[in-house]
Length: 223
Image (cartoon, rainbow, N blue to C red):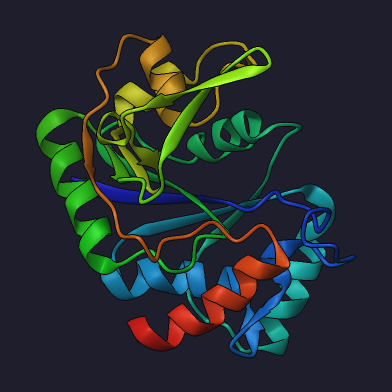
């Protein structure tokens, strides 16, 4: 089946305490988003890459592409108000007879093994959502109190979340709901059964200055 990857990069620099949108901050002397795009390209050069950016960020991305001689072919489309709308915009460029990975632009450390598992499982089950198990103890809040919860029953969800193209396009053909925290929750609202598969612990979402420091160290390990 034809493979697509919709890379959603609509973040700001607010939590990063930066005036530069976090997807454009430098990681190993290149904008972070370039590492993310490259990760999927080096996995499979035939994947159709779609980068979704806020409309006002597209000229900056095009400038960076020229500045860094970034020559990986990809389609750039403008996003929307929420992540939901940005994914929906990206899916308009996707055919139904396909497998579609939806990935956070600020997760540049996803492993090729994770990408492979997600595509393979989605082809078999219709969906594949990567996870890692929590290493810390877990507690559930109950008003002003809290109680312990077995961490063996908890999974931390990552991207890429991969789906049958027809199923995920149909799932996104609905109005936005604040309960949609990721693509899996949108798919479940459409009746899709979400299949979990193993991710990789290095596949962190870079949202704070501390995350960026960790990513610098991890990138040297996974190269």
